[in-house]
Image: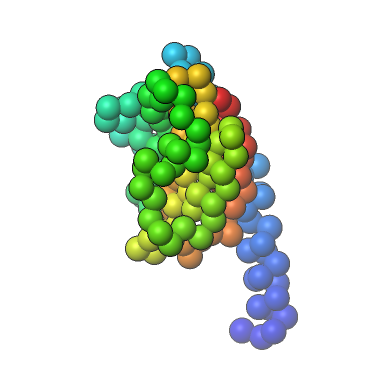
Length: 155
């Protein structure tokens, strides 16, 4: 492959995430009892594997099972802060990205060839969360999708 072809391929790959995210079919998933509401690319996460265990939520997978999205509400009756809630979850020490505010936390890292991203928003009596896992080698292609899901997570 010549240099011009490589550059064209790099430019094309850098545009794909925005095009892919924009061309997906999105729907709003809600859990009225907890206030959770989030945009979900249903044309990407086509496999619904049912309710989450011991929490309100769903496990969704891509058709080829290379990526998954878990949406769930954790009881937080003491209304602990996102920082305290994150600490109770015992996150791995090697987190590559961490942002914690009084309203939410977002953490991300790579494990066994997959990037995982977890965001939880503090709501009255709950922590409303999304957890996304996808191949680390495809991180650029997932950036726009993960960003939209994360930023659309309401209470």
